[in-house]
Image (tube, rainbow, N blue to C red; front, side, top):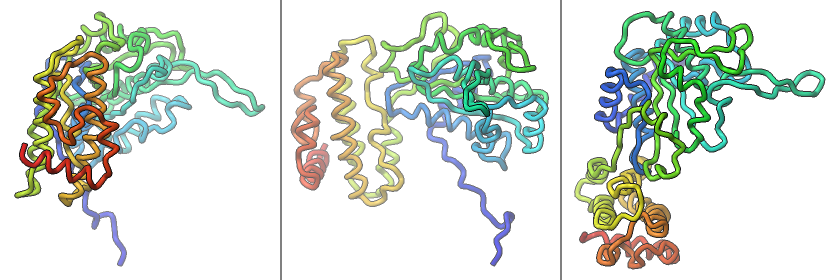
Length: 370
């Protein structure tokens, strides 16, 4: 039997993790806040929230197009190694009926201005040598595509037409990273001169009015953040804090099963909340995110869920809490440490030395009556 494209069912619709975060991003955008940072402890779903916003944005604009089809690196896979002409970009957007574009970069200490905006890159030449050529970075190229998209789709919209997600934004030297693009962020639509002329397109860059820059940042890394106050005033901060609700929903799917994940969440939350802070990060932002307590959907059976939670506790949760104590961020009370499963308090090495099967059984017993 031959299967035609018309007979295929669409991909399942992405389930939004937290509608309230999506609503906040939309509200701030409509309030002319176009550089937003989602901040919170590890495991609270910051990157997931950014991706959820993209998914909803594309679903609202183009119900028949998936988010991957609107991603810049899918539409223009060679943008880092060649210069796409404006007519070429316009033709691609029109032929595919694209009304919004996006992409994501995970920042790190070696991420540079040239990676984000534009700069010289070494490319091989026929004689076996290399040639230095100017090429666009992610934000620089996204800005140019965004400008062209505004002419392709001139309809008024209360939503962004281009989005760049800068994941782990505080991991890079952010002031150096943006360079003169900081000025361009303040003066949307204005041409700002860069040190690098891009072929016939010239040296200028312009950030379109319809572009949203959406960053994510772990609040615990605030002390090592590369942000200065001049840059901080340019973005709006959306805190994403741990929530018991998704943990409850996840463990309620088992019906009459014991909600081990909820019990562990409560123990860890009580331990952190009752501790004394010794650093410059508020206690509320040091609670571990709910992702640490949520088994993946592939864990269906109760035994699989408990085994996953056990490994999360021994190899992720305990080491993180131990780091908090060793770095002086939190000072835990002995009475709360004694409530933790496996009886070794924060000694993750001692907990991991227990045999796997025995450890799981002891873990279940300690959590069952919490």
